[in-house]
Length: 483
Ligand code: SF4
Ligand code: SF4
Image (cartoon, rainbow, N blue to C red; front, top):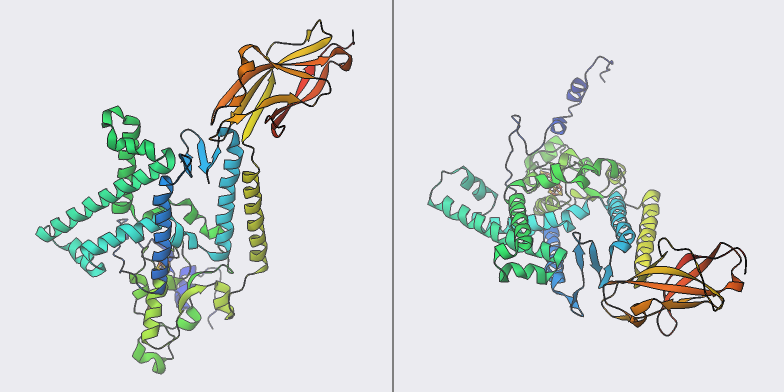
């Protein structure tokens, strides 16, 4: 065996060993002049593609249907980032609940990361809206108009004749129309169906706030799917960039079993040359929507769409060889030949994932419907009253987070204390739905019970039957002496 010194270049060593990893220096979709290589992925087919289609249809139905589902006249989901108002499963989250929204978002990120550590980029290939729209909507329309990969390539290369003009016009028109629909659905998730429907009932110049976002999002979606496509995943998406630090040798990913497949070669040479199972048909590369060769190993561009598994399984079936030459494997399981098993790290992550989800759900469901904030009236101290009490003036802000009116009273548990709302605030006894109510009130405490400058008191917002809706702590000021 050859020996090497430090002066030998990595390139030379790899060449001697017959390892070509030049693919690591380039992007599959960029040529050596830096020009984009347009991909024409072959139409996928097979078990996983069917399964993925069903999953996509369910997710698309969810995405399109949810903005139309209303409970008591309010959407069941609303992610209004503009007004910072969120409705999740019919529960309204206000800016005051921002910590819960932030926790929910962090939980989602942790969940995705932990899930990726165990199951790789299943999210990308199966659940991510970018992939679902690209592969299950736009790509299917493209196959329908232009045909499979070979026909698409032929059409792209041929001069602008009648056929090309007709097909390309139809494609652009349909892509634009679908983008228009998707933009409205995305906006309906943010501002609600009623708001979005104004785009159809109000002239644009009277509805610029709705019209401009609709035009911008339609054009952005159209631009992504007509031009940008797989580059969203391979160069733009930050989640994709994180794969290098998230994936481990024990992660289950779409991988090529090189131990079984190599050395690759023609079917007829298998016996004579002691070849592996890969017949080098390149079908796995031809179906890949990101243009990579999975036989080079796990790569950043792989979105785990499983198209290559289906393609290779089909070849293996035709050759009467076992499936899963490309399949869901971990690098470790390929190297050791053992079945994929959850490692201790993955088990610990799974427990953590369940815990984080549990805590988030608990925080969401334990959230109160009413939130009060009590503050001392600015610039006031205390009043000595003729009836032998000391009083302090407070301001309370009460937010009713529900869509219902809530009857209420303000109380304190301080012994012998009394609360009186100020002036016409006395007439207010219900909290209007989804609104903030501001009130001023006095707390009266017998002077004999006050013997320090500042006494802690609790203020409760209660329902008339005495159920606590929310509580606050504040200070009650009084004279040092009881006289
Ligand atoms: S589809 Fe399977 S047999 Fe064909 S090149 Fe890819 S890995 Fe080899
Ligand atoms: S390598 Fe296979 S799983 Fe990965 S993106 Fe390409 S076709 Fe999909």
